Image (cartoon, rainbow, N blue to C red; front, side):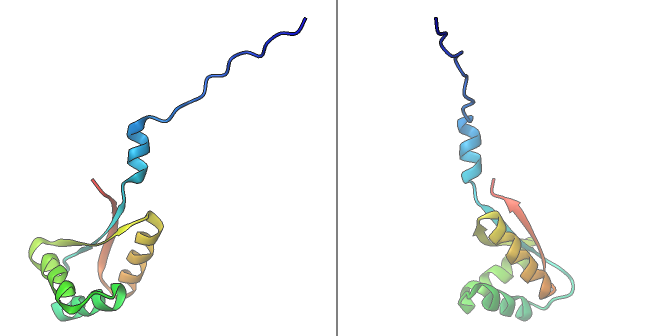
Length: 98
């Protein structure tokens, strides 16, 4: 007489968790009292390849609003952006998109 194997309960991810992993990460640059507006514009052009008008708009957001989202995507890529921005002397952080 053979016995049937016991049923196995599989864990299923909560749909909220699955959607949560799809949310991108953001690279934020914060206003600081050290870097000039021209320099921040230059860094955005150099690091991200943004055209001057886009780089200037982001720089003005940093200046006027205190911060700007300069990139979004995967966590590792955003962390690399932050490291590069730090090497240029900018204040930057990574945050999960809301």
